[in-house]
Image (cartoon, rainbow, N blue to C red; front, side, top):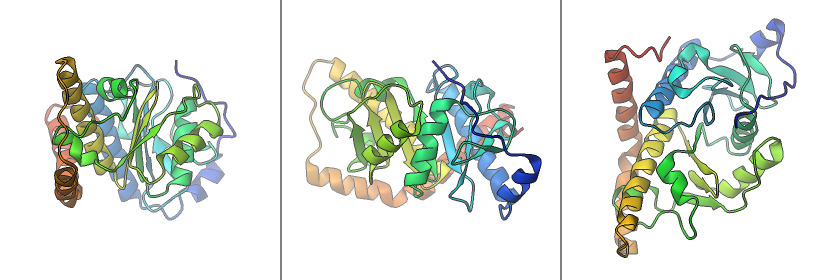
Length: 266
């Protein structure tokens, strides 16, 4: 299912150095470690699918370079040093390998069109993807966890097959608009955030909200939605604490991985 990207030209050593000029090495290292920890935790939780699916994050201080996983490696194999730095034209400016084709065409166009999306996580995680396969709004606003996403969700209803050129990525970016989460009909989900930690936090809780909703739907009894005013108020309460909560969540993930000897930071 995964596809190799036809290289548009690999940056030479002479080209790579200027490409990373002005990038804080410590900040880049931190972003690498955080993103690698997200891959490892997603794998542990069963949110990945073979060597498909991809996470990306803009390089700190840059809107034209992004970190992404290389083609051919499963989420549980990703380390900080294994991540690639690519430009928006598909050139690898740091790292070994190439991005998977759909990873590049989706993530480059998302970051190009929506620079507020400092991180973008695309998965076919089973519960959220299941809600992308049914008619109607994906989330029913019936559970508290789902209210974290109230007013933040878009639906891309026009599935166009694999994203093997930039047009599909541009269409997905347009469908996302001002939302932070887009359900891709017949496909999966993309979660974006202003930081790696916030994208991770949303990815985790989106899957949990979808899991609980599917269990309730399986009962065969009607779902009871939270009244709209209470849904809006609860959402605002959640969002007020989200940046700090997300940071603490990812810190916890990284501590637990370090304690377990998982070499995400290698």
